[in-house]
Image (cartoon, rainbow, N blue to C red; front, side, top):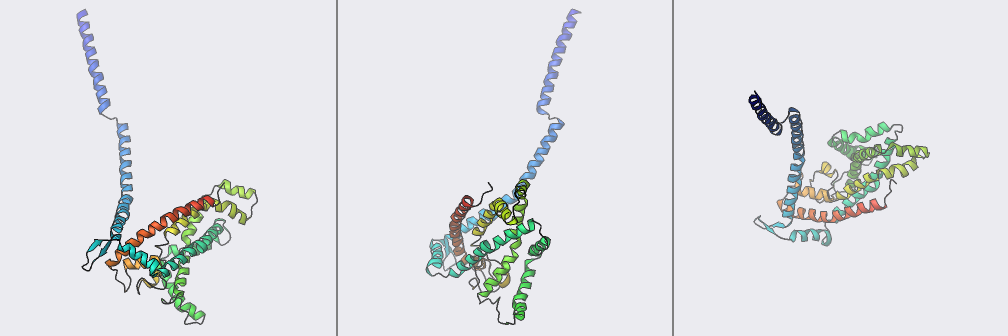
Length: 337
């Protein structure tokens, strides 16, 4: 009996050993349903994030890196008589000559500067002030929003058609001046007419940005102005303006970056019918028509190296100006403190 008990005890120990080993192997190589569920959830999240980020990454690689690389390549090329491209620095010399020697681009620079200054000196302050009026919910604030947001709701082509009818027929009839010529493509009046139209069309864009910035101001900050019994002017100057100043800095930087590419609504009114160089042409309009063409203008591949070289030089000019402007505005501008 003693020998049989010992054999049973040894057999039990061996059996227990293999059972424990089997349990450990099972825990090591076989996941529990809970862990498997968590693992599948994380895998699904990672797959979703991968495809979610893939589109902007591919878009960036194709339309920014790819296009920029091709632009950089074209800037150092020029076509020969047979239409074959060869490496050269002459395109940069041509751009420099056009701006500083022959000064044929002086009209474009002038018109672009006027567009830029109107956006910074006239449009931006008005956008900030109107945004404050809407933010304070003064009487008829809702009507202001509807009128100013209309260009963002209705197609711009509808407003272009209405504006052409008003400036070509309506105003000359009302003012009894048939030769008013607000949209005469050969008159400087056309530039200012379309410029004013563009300011109104783009007014709501900045208005929405500034209004959103004001709505994000802490209630404690606004209540401080109420406790101090500040007037609306003081509240705007000492509370609202410092709080939204980072947004204003961003707007100014974007405006500087768009100095060389902004072509307003001139293409919608005239379509580049008489070529890129016209009395209302800006740098953005000129280069856009050079690349895209117009009603009676066919883009020439021979212009691409010139446009590419100009784009690179513009970038080299705008980048330091943008960084310097950002530094000065942040250093000497109003602070929330």
